Every structure is written in structure tokens, then in C-alpha cells.
Image (tube, rainbow over all chains, first blue to last red; front, side, top):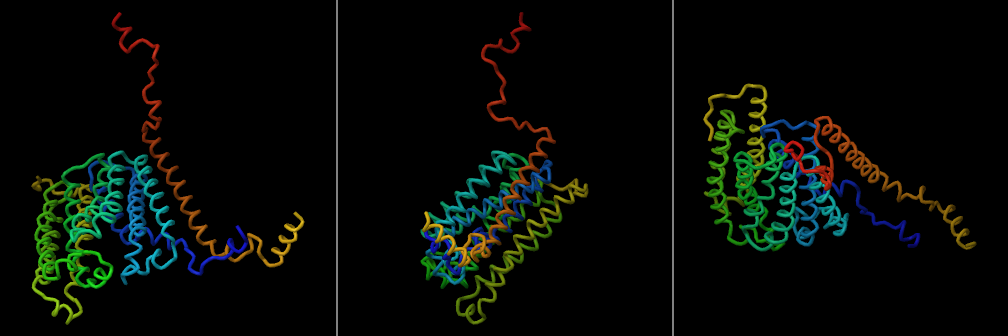
Length: 316
Length: 81
């Protein structure tokens, strides 16, 4: 290697923040929160140090699958305004580096979760990484408009993993938390796709509005909102719910269905006239919707821990 | 060999010593952050180990879990005599 080779670096040389950006920190925040709620709401005591270490492993595992997603999707990320600034399309990180980061962190996160937690949690994390990086990113995303419907499972696993850290297994409560995120994902992303339609069309990603049209997408958002509502209310009558959860879930789901109904009753001309105001508001609310459901599960768990839970509450 | 030494001295004159070139300044932040992450991992493993030992978790490897000796009499053999 010559001196020149050692000293010449590109002006956009990767900084630590670029590698962090590979891990999709915003997604990691949601994963961390839902995994923590799953762990805290689960029966049994987990030492705080073990809990923090396990949640860190889950977050890093989710981030690693994000890096693998960016490595695979670099070609279409260049074509979309929303993703063109990511580390690989912007040239700050090479695809090979992203692949190395993704594979290394995937292996380390699963291994450490096995050592810190248990085999069930580590197995679920490994499956989540595989599901997001291979099933969703490589198989589904460019092949079918149902990509979001099936791929949403990857984002739904973290509370199940948190629950498995505490209990060593799966139960009705953890499956309901999974269902909540799984059924929430399609209306959330389809609302985004309605006002980002051109982006996906340019990249050739067969999102529902691109393939089936916006009319069908608006109808599907309402259908999923109606399926989601009972699934989101049901946890109220399990070990993770209670009267507080029921009240909040009823309110949030009424608002969610009303928003979906408003989207269903609009057409593209009306949406373009007001700059997709209703769709954007629904998309923003959907984030708060999911956050508040998990926040109230956390609150119910805290009340139970303080001995303030309602003893006579009906449970399935 | 002699030529190499001359080249090195030129490098010193031009400020190309490994620890003085500006490339190391640019990479300093990245290296420090990576070092902090590695230190965090070490601390996390140490803390988890302390907690697991304090909780009395069996941390022995799989090959030390069952302490059977092939030549030893089977369990309960003495009591049956």
C-alpha cells in the first residue's frame, strides 16, 4: 500500500454517526420501547441489569436487521427522496461495510441474548432478524403488494421477545401484543404510501397504491382498522390489561376507525387539494396510537406492581 | 534500505508521520465512539456476570453439568445392597 492510498480519503468518509444511521435509530426506539413493555408487563421478576442488557440486545438485533435491509435495498433507496440521504446511497458507507455491520451485530445480539436471557428469547430474536432481512426485504418487498402485511410481523416480535426474556416462553398476552403491532402496520404504512406514492412508483416497489390504486388502498385501510380494533381492545381482559387499558383502547380505536373512515370517504382530488392533510394526520396519529397502547400496558403493570390493580376485573 | 530512510525523513518533513496526519484527527471521533461502545459491552458483560453469580445461577459449561464418572457405581447401587 502506498502512502497515497493510506492518506487519501473521500470527503464523505464514514463517521460513527453514519454507522448508527445504518441501524435505523427511529425504528430502534420503537423496538426498545415495545420490548421493554413486554418484559416489564410479563409475570415474574427480572433483575434490572439483566433487563437492560436484554433490551439492548433486542434493540441491536433490530438495528442489525435494519443495516442488512439498507445493504440489500441500496439500489432502490437511491431512487426515493425519503431514503436517498441514507448512508449507502449517499456514498458515506459502502455496501460491504453495511453487510459486515449487519451480520456481525446480528450474531452478537442473538448470542448475548442467549447468554443474558434464555434460548426462547434468543431464538425469537434470530427469527425476527431473518424475517425482516430475508423474508420481508429480499423476498416480499419487491414481489407483492402484501409486503407490508406479512413483513409487519418483523416489527411485531419485540414485545414477544421481551416477554420471553421474563417467562422463557410465549403466552396469550404476548401473542396479543404481537397482533396489535402486526395489524397496525398495514394501515400505518398504507397511509404513508398514499402521500408517498410517487416515491414507491419510481423505485418500482409494489406498494398497494402503486399496484391496486389509491381507491382500493383507502378501503383496505378501513378494513384493517376494523380488524385491528377488537384485537387492540382484547388485551384489556388479560393479565396485561385492566380498566385503564380498556378506557384508553376504546378511545384510541374509535379515533383510529374514524380516521380510516375519513380516508375511505375521500378521493385523490380532495386529498391533493388540501395536501393530503387527512392522510398525514392519520399517519401521525397512528404512531401515537401504538405508543399510547403500550404506554398504558406499562402503566397497568406499574399499578399491579404497586398493589393498585383491580382484583375483580374479568379476564379470559 | 538507505533509500527507505531518506523517504521516511521526507515524510517527517511533510508532516506525514502516522500520528500527525490530519486523517487521524478526522478519525479520532469515530475511534473514541467505538472505544466507548466496546467499553460499554465489557461493563455490561461484567455487570450481568455479577448479577447471575449473586442469584446463584449455574454458570458451568455444558460439559461440566453432569459429573458422571464411567467407572463409578450407578446411583443408588450402595443403598440396594
